[in-house]
Image 1: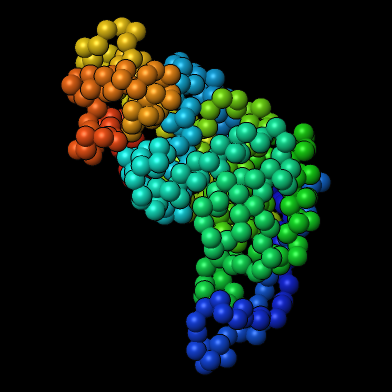
Image 2: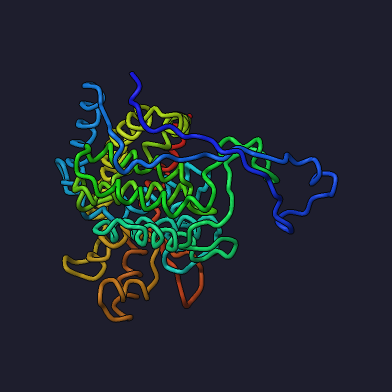
Length: 395
């Protein structure tokens, strides 16, 4: 049963190639279509939503599971909040075929290593952090700040500014005539984003439905020249926090979406055609899967941490013992990181690192006498297995 929602219209526009954007021959330029169809996006601030009984129940169950995961369930989740945040950011990036090893991402986070994908995913971590910090005031400036956090380290696009040009998804890079989807013209973006913000202020919708619809509307508007998918998934989390579904942790919803990626993209297409049910079902399914995936990851990391207690020879209360909790959330460290995070002296940090190397918890990565980098392979293996499992679920 279709859930009616404002469907897109279309607008026929003249196509004017951007000079200097791409090096193409005169013949190829002359062969480009003269017109294209761009979407006309309808406002949603006051759109009505009628849910069938089973869809409402599906959303309610998923919301309950999200809240239970956030509260901790049978075990305490909060100590793993930073790991879940990074893992969700990595899964959101993986939807767009951006992958990185856990080691490369952890090295990038402390300023070590120079892997390009790790730096891109680390920017998405900052976007998720911004989304959670800004959830209290979901307005246009908050969305721009999320995008600014994502795109701050690149030079081809303008971080934190609405686009001023036509963009499109799929098809030829030269023109939008055969694209899979052509978002609205740039001039429409500010008003459409203002309408979306008004939609976020509503209090008459189920929270998970509001988050899913807001995400789909954002992706349809496509307000930036790049980074729309990752910013839009960060916005989904921001809405869940804003509406009170979650309070403490980032639930791996993108990990759930990755498991049903083809359905997710198809659901966005159905949304644009005026049927909201597929995206609501998809996000509800992703939320349920995400809680299971998150619990599995926390369970693996908890088992690693418990095993360390038996493996470490250092006395209780020592810096080496205290460092174990740090290593679960930051599995690559330097002495400077330990000094900063634990508030100990440099000699104490160095001694604790040596102790954990001797006990088999840490490996030194550089072989240098100075500026050494240490990694916790047990944690990194668990995180890499988690990421690989997401890919297997998708296949």
